[in-house]
Image (cartoon, rainbow, N blue to C red; front, side, top):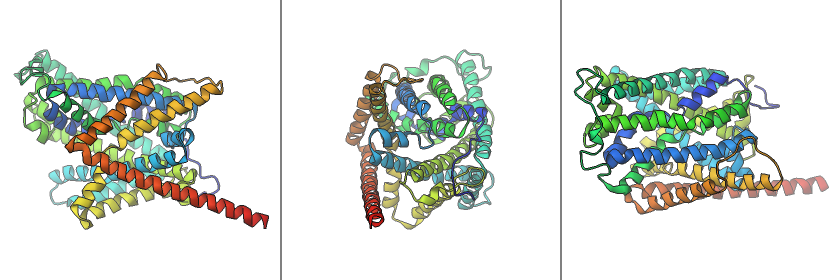
Length: 463
């Protein structure tokens, strides 16, 4: 291993970054979780996706402004460090790492459960272990391997969604013979467009926010490619049509073709329910394959993202120094192994600690997406003001600054307050805040210890 420079490679090709940016936001949440949101808010779920999508577009624009000016594998954690303070970069970096580390065993379990339904002889825990180890191996060799693997997984997701949309549009216009389903009357003929009120729409939006987290991964990955600024600006410019096509249009097709009261939405997922309704043979097997591809892709990205975040934290002195050690191919091998090891500890904790304790650990990631977005907005606000004061010009800018930035900050703050008052989301906010406070305290202790070591070192040199 090389230990003198510990720099990451630039092995990601343009097509890797492009496909990452296109399919980075497509996870199992779209194929399965969206059914839960529809069952809760009815046809008005489309508003939840529009609101969440608009928020992601604005946040990505702010993040891209900073990332184009200064590409960094630590992304928003590095910018928070510069704009708000070392404690902020430390805190949001570790919270984000924690989020993806918890995602790894969840996604591995979903993938293992699907494979187990095909091959019952194989135990779920064995499959989960094998899947995680295989994807750890792809992340250990080189970033090019990760990019290639992710490219093909992402391509399957994109083809599946485009096919679903084409099928749905044909059904809506009555061009699908034998389906017996057409038109869009289901948008209002089961209790109206918003049967459970606007509160249910906001609650559904919180479910959708979990699906959207991952769009920012492209700013982390682009730092390991040539022409990082070009890739980031291109990916950010396309985020509007990506969210419109993959999320808003596909959800519109679901609520137009299936009554929101259909119990299958919450149990089987939205895509399976639509295909079943249209009479597509082997609908569940088809969607199971797509979901398996999606969760494998998400698990692959989770390992990549977690390892790069802890690598960046290490480079800034906020994580163990060993985490910045890279192989000859420029892969942060220790950071990958640390992230995988933490994921395995989470799985073991599920069996050893009481259910309430593990429930708290899982809930602690519930509001991290909103905290990440809030930190990005505050960082962009401060960095832009600082750069403007210095008379510097930016090649990529946030729209209507500072009004839209302030609007995002106020909106996210309002949503967090709303979550506190809703019993079904209160635990998520409280546990995330408790975790954040613990991380901040640990950061302050690390900073104080480091300052003391510097003082001692200077005294020693003076002596």
